Amino acid sequence: MQRSTHKILTTHVGSLPEPALDKSAPDYEAKLRSAVADVVQRQRAAGLDVINEGEYTKGGDWLSYVEHRFGGFEERPRQGPPMMMRGRDREEFADFYSYASERGTLFYAPGGQIRAVRPNYVCTGPITYKGQQAARTDIENLKAGLNGLNPEEVFMPAIAPGFFSNQYYRTEEEFQYALAEALRVEYLAIVDAGFILQIDDPSLTRLYRTEPSLTVAERVRDAEIYIEALNHALKDIPPEKVRFHTCYGINIGPRIHDMALKDMVDIMLRVNAGAYSFEAANPRHEHEWRVWENVKLPEGKILIPGVITHCSNIVEHPELVAERLVRFARIVGRENIIAGSDCGFSSQATAEPEIHPTVVWAKFKAMAEGARLASEELWGRRGR
Image (cartoon, rainbow, N blue to C red):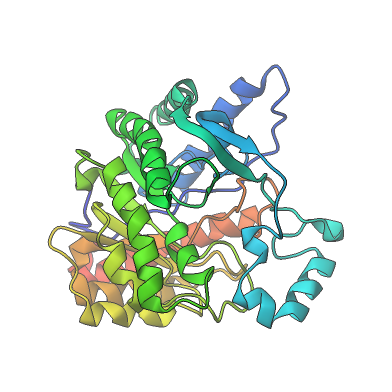
């Protein structure tokens, strides 16, 4: 994994606004390859150093690709509202979320139709991995899109264990380890292709939120089960080939019940990764840069703090981006920082993201300019 040895490198989390493609069209595969090539070029043009395929190949939803790549799951009727529509924020601010529904915002499509409700897949049998060809297609499309470009590095996201419902395995631990074994096939394919593997894991923050009656210590114990399973999936993969991303999802709401970074940073650092990506730019979490004044970053590790946010269509000023980067660099060292985004810019890799596509690319350009300004301050004129 490249470090910021002469300038602050820039990257993002993965999910980018996707062009509207008809998956049933006979020329879909060709158009998908073209779209991947275009999004790769746009990332470089916006000044991003470490890039990906925009998650265009995850079937329209970075979670629902379980349907296509994993055996042992079936779609079942949902019991109660989906996860994104539960939680203490939605209980305490029910009026706000009702208002958002009526306005067609905040995970809702125009006309108040729920937009981001995913199919409810449940494990009903032994978990197997059957996505070898799909993963190969992802890799081939990304490699083709890189032709003629020279990014500092390339990453590809894959989901972590967690999230999914179990009706087959006797214990949660058995279930998580079965998931890990299946996911390991995809992880190895990405690393063997020469890409950095990004583990997408909102489960870490979700586990803290879903059972408000539990103490923080009790929630940590629950999280430990699947963190151990994740490390099992990463077995024998060098940590420097892995970056871990956790976040609170795309919830442009009050979010006063988000778990604090200070309460989960220790378990996050247990993941066998070389870099850690987390929210640090939105108003609910920007202050948490101070956590690193008291938590020592392990030797050889990298932080990828969000310095632009997915929670607002306001484009951050490059000078603000630079300030955020310099704060982190002063604490953990300039070579241990890569500029990133809080989360992906499309909750479902859709053509109708929460943040308008034109704003997404403007944010990336602001981040690149902010990283340049921070580099000048941290390295002098050599950082240009």
